Length: 309
Image 1: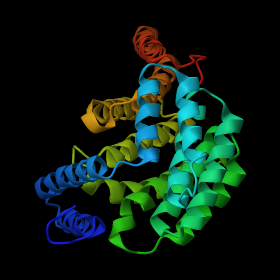
Image 2 (image 1 turned 180 degrees about the vertical axis):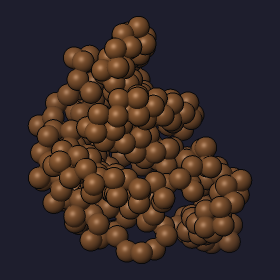
Image 3 (image 1 turned 120 degrees about the horizontal axis):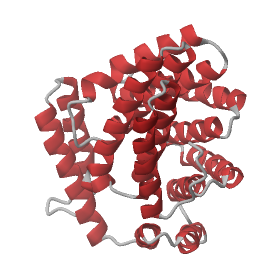
């Protein structure tokens, strides 16, 4: 990878430290430049060290772009069939399969895969991987209406992360998930507190336009805020929050490294939330515009459109 004998992990670790320092100093120009360097390093390493699982992941993504869902699923399953598969690779493959199943509204299959992903992350014995797995499992459980189980998973995620600043984004994402559960459990005051704490962690990072993960979390934060406003009968506040969620999700989808069927599906979800909120405000024409945009987007990427968010 390098002429000085450094392993691939060493330059990556140095770049991650540089990125964290830039974030801590709110130097978003340096942070953005470092992200570009990380992407370049990862691309170089993948080109020089091709692996069967990476090649199959690329193949699956190509099938997804063509809406060939069965072929994409087959490619992911081929990864799981590779001999001597590492737990981290198994985690990624099951996570990708869970995302595909959620996209196709196969909720029970999605739940099975997120649980396998979490089990693989435990075997990998990497805190950051386990936190990501638990977040994915909680999101899936919430979507499937299994709020009590989601609360248990969220509680574990909170117990796993420490006070290191590197977990601030993850902490904010988990608090947002807990706020969503709070709303389902009629604990609106708790939801408001969790959302406030999450925003305090996310908002300082919003200056990094290239950071798809941060802006994805912000989009979800606005969608949960919209639900809280609606529950409190703040109809205009709900519309405004959904509009924010739509705008940010579109920004994520516009990023070259994040442009895929999944980010487009998130835009469609946010448009559905906005349309519903507009209808409650008797803004039928505006709701129709949002619905038409959503339907056109789903038709373009070839995913089922049942009207469910």
